[in-house]
Amino acid sequence: MADSRTPKVLGLGLIMTSLFLLVSAVSHYFSYAHDAVLMEGTVEFSLDNAARQYQNYLGKLGALVGDFFVKKGFGFAVFIPIALLGAWGAKVLKPALTFKMYSLWIKGAFLSFWICIAASFPFLSEVLMPSGDTIIQDSQLLGGGVGFGLSLWLKNIMGTLGTALLLLLSMGVFLIVSYDGLLD
Image 1 (cartoon, rainbow, N blue to C red):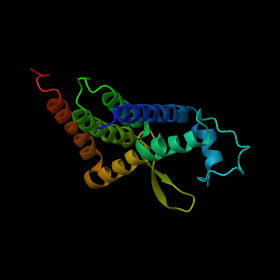
Image 2: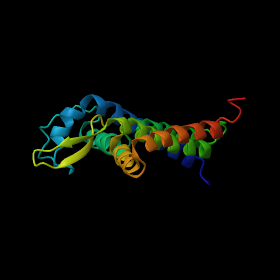
Image 3: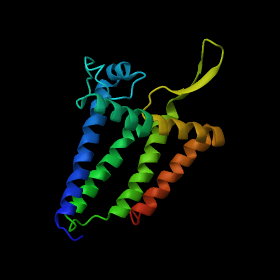
Image 4: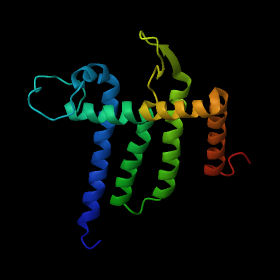
């Protein structure tokens, strides 16, 4: 890069974005019930609802971001990509840091998906609706929307036991590949 300020601005921007996402996600866990009622049916940034008091530490924007990344996204596994974003910013600021971003992103992506599936899978349950229809829901939403959807998909394809075995196998393979020599 021709200008030495560019990596500094980019690295600082990545770290600040990571901090914003971290505060939004953490705050979401304490304020989601209150903020969900306020956000119902609204995603626009208008002043007509300025009287609404969001409990998320970052206000309405924090509530929307937390809802998107935690509830509709990866659940509590969202903290892995947030940490990776901060690490990427640190690496851009200080290229001499010894960790390899490619390896971290691959491991982080696997763990994010694995954790959100594993966090949703045990809590899938059938609920009988007043209309007589049966729906499947995730009673805890620990894995977010991504975990719910992938857990449901895997359970429909492989069944409960097959999904549990796949989760165990995939984590075993991940540990062996990532930490070669660990079992020696």
